[in-house]
Amino acid sequence: MNISCGLDDTTPRATLVTWAYTTPACVLRRLLGGDGQGFDQGAPLAAMGCFEGFRCADCGATVPEVVATRCGACSGVLEGSYDLDGGVPSRDTVAERTGGWRLPELLPIGPVKLGEGATPLIEVPGVADELDVASLHVKDEGHNPTGSVADRGLALVAAAAAARGDTRLALASTGVDGQSAAAYAARAGLDARVVVPSRASFVTKAMINVHGGDMRVVEGRFDDARAAHAAERDDRPAESDARFPAGPFESPYRHEGVKPVYHEIVQTLAWRVPDAVVVPVGHGTVPVGVRSAARELAAAGLVDGTPRVYAAQPAGCAPVVEALTGGRAPEPIDHPDTVVGALEVPDPTGGRWAVEAVRPSGGAGVAVADEDALDAAATVAHHEGLELGVAGGVAAAGAWTLRERGELAAADTVVLVNPVAGSKDADVVRSRLMGRGL
Ligand SMILES: [Zn+2]
Image 1 (cartoon, rainbow, N blue to C red):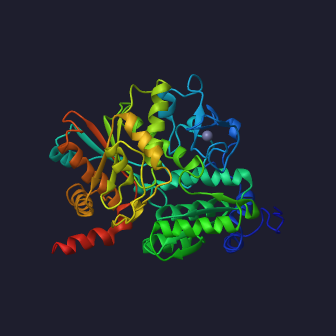
Image 2 (cartoon, protein in one colour; image 1 turned 135 degrees about the horizontal axis):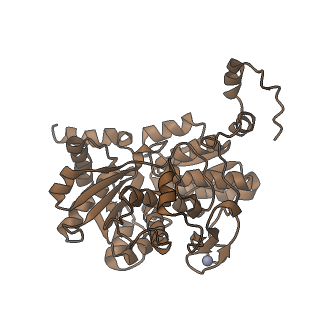
Image 3 (tube, rainbow, N blue to C red; image 1 turned 120 degrees about the vertical axis):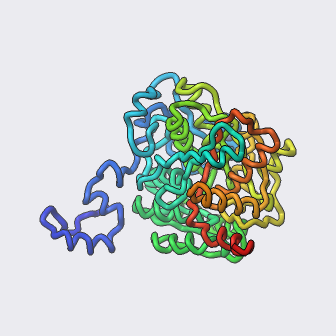
């Protein structure tokens, strides 16, 4: 790209600021220089520590380079393959690092950075007492730049797209990851095409616009948006406009980017592996990422053992939980109906892999009523001060059910993942309180 635009070291700052509003971020980045925090576009693949390439989870085919797809041989999900015998840093080395991404050796590419990661692991002793478990912690992913765990995966997606020379991230979204895609596209100097259902929250739709995303709102629910997005893709093949598929499980980066969630959990727990991690499940990237990270850390000798991973879903849309309970593969839900918009994914692309992340961990699935999820979010906010999104409320309510079923034990250290900031769902939780006359 030609960056000759008359700016030099003597250009007044006011001029630079004005000009910045009309200039692509990639040009700004080159002019202003990387600071190691904001405009790090990702290291070349060969430089990423232990990363050896991608491997198909189904047929074992290997792919050595930056990819934008699933397995070319069988359409299976690709996952990172790492040399865990050498090059994994010690606990002390990791402890000396700050910020997010403290184990870049276990990632497939360097991220585009916006300050994501290093989210707090907050102990909630009052809830632990009520639940009668040894300790209960919430990994609050609401602290990420756009308020959701999706930021971690989109940080890698944007880096991969830039590395391939693609110019546009494209996805269908329930809303939350569309906002994240628009933000990271802006950060990387890319465009974003986001197709959302009309049911997506006002906040996410507004912020997709604010980030400059090219948004299309489709009447209906997520599957309607996904169908519209697929039609766009079929009408205009990816190679014609350099689109990078940014949806969950369309490339390996979304679920690989989740792995630091688990890295941070065990580091914060002084390298003790929790007994159980309860994860709200929509598309399934979080349980897949958590399970991959758990297996890799154990194989590398950084920790002993792996946690049981539990999938929590709203009862009105629980294809992964029903598959786990029924001992079968996920089947689409014909009439999804839940107020938990981020989890209303009736036919999750990664459903089968989510099941395969949970089952061998010793975990299980748990479905909860919307009312219980809303009450759980309100209870934790009221008694512990911690704001959970309604998806986090699904995890909290699920933990109660799991304890009643005996899946969680009194001696357990339990971690709940809150994937979306509570403030994104303020209207939904408050409406529940008003419905109860509060
Ligand atoms: Zn394959």
